[in-house]
Length: 189
Image (cartoon, rainbow, N blue to C red):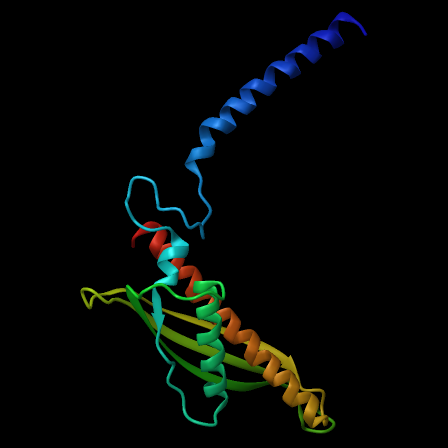
């Protein structure tokens, strides 16, 4: 090994303590989004603790409609996202969600005049109310559209595809609401 390679090796070794020192200094600045530790300096609970204290109200939907099935799925997804499958904390906030769904034919087979691709759209509005003050602290809307193949004349395949699309749309809505509420608890706005 020549003196140039030895000098380069020493330079690389000198970078290691600088990198480690930087990581140690900056390590205290970051926290996981869904962490349970209280936020440093604010006195507010961690995001996971705040989400566990949200009471999710029943989502109104007409009986025996696809929206009724999706209302149950969205509420269950939200509860699981907030609590991780555990018991909820005593409620500090109340979440109210409303949904509406719609279907549309995207493509029709010219030979049979049957739809081959359909779309399902799901829209929701939600509001988070602070129980102690009765003040709405977050309100918003989320929407999604998912398409699915109807496979022509195969009726049961069409129903299966339609229900899978509805479930995907419900999951997207619940994930959007969870992310928005988590960002509220992190930023306070």
